Image (cartoon, rainbow, N blue to C red; front, side, top):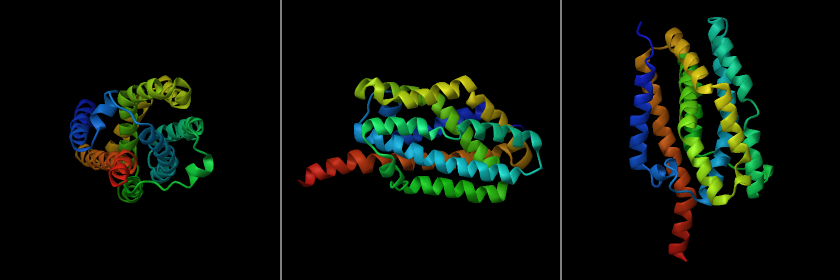
Length: 233
């Protein structure tokens, strides 16, 4: 069985993201630190919190699906879960600084793209065990290392450093615990045991398409809605 090629997977992630940068308004500028919008950013951090909560549930289910089939893989995934639980509270502190209460946060429905992503992960866990979820988790960490510091620094410049304390703390935690490396070792083990490198690329393609859908929904619900209201007034 062929092993997962990290360079190939990262190259595919870059290629797929480039397609989304071309498709979704302002997405390239956001990820290059050239553009930010207050409503857009607040809603983005809100969805981040909601997605982390759901992601922890999906990861827990994936760990359950490992069962006793691979203790080494289970230990890696359990370590990642233990280090991730409660991290949404770092972002919640930033949202409170922006004036969003915990009640308002909890009452916010997730975007359809987030619901589709989490539902897909949950269903695929039944079919392919932990492999899809670990591929998603690796992508999240790879993406975070590559882009979140840029977006966060742009937000700090635009809104003030006090509005990104929690987000910066999360970035620092992931860097100090080398989550990108931990999750690649985890995904490589999961793919070897439960899936294949070819199927891993299929999963990654689905995930990044849904992330593009998310950013499109994010833009339309904030900047797009505001511009439409101005035109209609």
